[in-house]
Amino acid sequence: MSLFRPITLFISLSFFYVYSAVCVPLPVDDAATPAEEAAAAAGLVSSVIEAGALASSSNCQRSCFPALNFTMPAQVPSSLHDWWCPMECEHAFLGFSYVVTGCQNLTQLNSDFADIRKNFKGRYIRLYAACDQPDFYDNVIEAAWQNTLGVHALIWFGFDGGNIWKTRRDNLFKTLHTNPKAPFVTRAVQFGSEPLFDSVLPHESLTEQVVRAKILLSDVLIPVTVSEMAYGYQARGAQDVLDQIDFIDAHILPFFSTNATTGSAAWPIVQQDIDWFTNYGKSKKIYFSQNGWPSVTSPGVEPNTPNAVASVSSEQAYYQMLDSQCETMKKAPHGGIGWFAHAYSDQQAYGYGIYDSQGQLKFPFQPRTSC
Image (cartoon, rainbow, N blue to C red; front, top):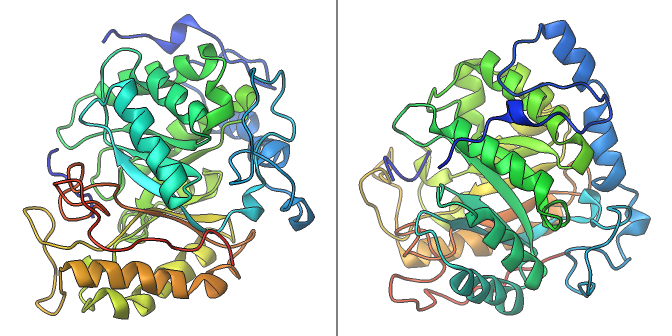
């Protein structure tokens, strides 16, 4: 369930060509037959993943970005070879959903990212919503670089219709190709949030966007996914989207289940979604990208059963429950499930933050980063 309802220069991708292994110019909105798209995308999942995302578990002890023992180099490396920690080594708590509608300046980004890294042992931030200020993502890249954090970037559709998401997509892709630090901190690009559930695009069109994005980003080895809940795929019959994404960014929001009660009792609901994604996602790597339990209800954050309890204690208990299931979730495909907490602060996502609206911790929060 999306949490905000609702909460520039146009740079066309026709001005730059695909810098990919296939070396075929393909602006995102140019027409291509399904056969051409399938041929162009064939192998991109495996080539991107094998180049820097998935590796044998024997590599999990090496120093790599953004492991907690990693020291950033003084200069941007010349190659992504052996830069990223293998996705098979990533499980347990990863970091926070970080809402950017406030268009935080570089000083604020640095402060928040340092807090996430040093005080919570975060390895990633997952962007949520959008800031349309020019060069904003350059500031995110710089703050991430300075604080040894990877970024799950987001192409935000919003809730008001229109085509501004295309401008956001084009601007992001341009930055990923022009900022030399971008490929070294951008772990993935997500289409979201919940574009299937919100019916912003037919699933066939979303599949086309994913395929073309994979081609456009193959040279910088950035995987592409969709940030969506299981119900969105189920309701839209979107197996084609699941088949094309490089890995699964799952929305796990059990508070909205008709079976919800408290955060501590939410595991059966979570397990049901894990099983569905594992089965229909054909055992791809799973991340919980938008994942949490609210401490209070608000417009757009209302339960589907009177038994669901929104409270600080229930929010805390939800994360304690996830932490207690670390060993179980580590058995999921490709080294286990890594999860983000949605969200960093109530100032960003009311009721969902680890910090309240006054900037105070709502409860102790030190989940495991491995098990």
